[in-house]
Length: 133
Image (cartoon, rainbow, N blue to C red):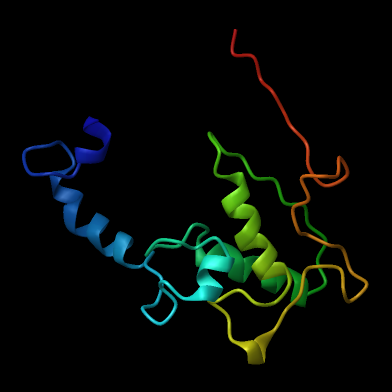
C-alpha cells in the first residue's frame, strides 16, 4: 500500500512527485485513440498504454533493419492475454499508435518470422518456473 503512496506529501519519495506525474502523462494514449474500437481491439481498454511505445518502436526498427530477435514476456498475473492483443495489433500492422502509411508487419506475411503470441502452440509459447526455495 505504501508503494503506491511513495511520492505523496510526507512520504520519502515526495521530491519525485512531479517527475512521476510527468512520466505518467507520457504513458497516456492520445485522446484520438482512447476508447476507439481499434484501441479496444488491441486490448487498450484504458487511458494509458500497456507496452511502452519505445519498446514497440524498437521492435519495428529491428524488423526494418532485418535483425533477428526473440520476444520473452514475463508477467506476474493474468495480463498476458491483454498483451497478446496489443502485440498482435503491432505484428499485423494495425496498432493504433502507428499510422497506416508506415506499416511494418511482424506476422510472417512477408516470409519473415511471425512474432505474434500463439497460446495454442508450444512452438511459440512456453512457461518457465523458478522455485525460490
